[in-house]
Length: 484
Image (cartoon, rainbow, N blue to C red):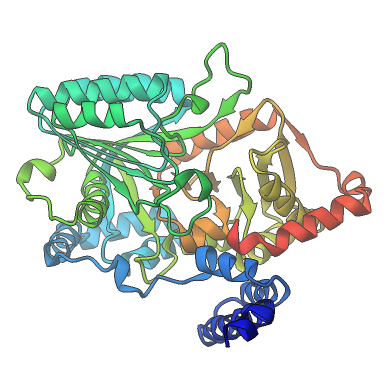
């Protein structure tokens, strides 16, 4: 018997592979997900024995309804309900918001259906350009913290800027400030020495979904891509800038890094705090003791409407993608989008095409040189469809642009962590600030127009002349777009 197995080991393994592949393919079919994504995974399972199963195991399994992301504490539900009640708008406030937003009130109504996304009216919003300014502001705010510091980051490294941050956290923890830190295990790199230092100083920290070999799992599914900082429940930060020297334009840097972040003070801090606490429950497996100091009343009188939109495998709806979709479809004058990775679904592509063909000034800014070979070519595979619809596409040439922003009609803008790609829409945990304010929107518009002065607009005739080999590379990378 053993001799028979030994002589036919490869036949047995191939047969076992296809039994498992057929089971996996059946599971994918029954989910009724996007047909393109379904076909991509089934082709990989059929064409690449063994490798296909590994790809499906790491990238293809859907956990959205899985218990892995179920929150264990009912306390969070009570907090979310209470915050929602606090921000139920009066009839007069609704009338004022309706008059200002016009058709874009649909955005507010859309996200109000998500119980953790109330619209908040009293906020002060400051747009931050690049990491140098962000860290100067953030470090100043951290040093002035008196009650708590909450940080949640996709990338945290104990390099120059990371060590400076960690030193501040350790000092504040020694002073009695409650410091809670969550970082993604795949995106981050922190030495045992640094972890010991934080532990000894009283910093509470947890890795998000730890993996055995993080260096070899850079695209493991369901990563926490958020970048959140909250100081005393009064000041908050979110956007594209992680904690790493790669984001800081030091003199010795090999490449200029262009990014956008936002600093918020006001009522929007309460929903932002909720999202941090829900993640903290998950990573620490223990609820945080909820006190009034976590949700202080705001002293901000400035009226700037803000919604904090979050999405991930634990949400029933793709909130950020849906908000962008509605914003595009209700645009009347212009849509300016900046994203480092443009690998969208058909809904976003079609809405951009229709807007442009309807006379809306639609512009897309992407990097000329990406930090991902596959993402770059996958992005390029979508450009022709946009150019044909009169969308203006620019490629940033000054360095690498990592900002994730959209501004529409001098009325609405969004700054956050979500790219316009499959991963941000469907797989990763993301968070964006949706801002309904003319002044803030005009500021973001001015930044966009400044950035395109350091960019090259793609000419449709020149783009058509790309070599056949280049187009094949783009098409190949596009096949993997649901997993990038």
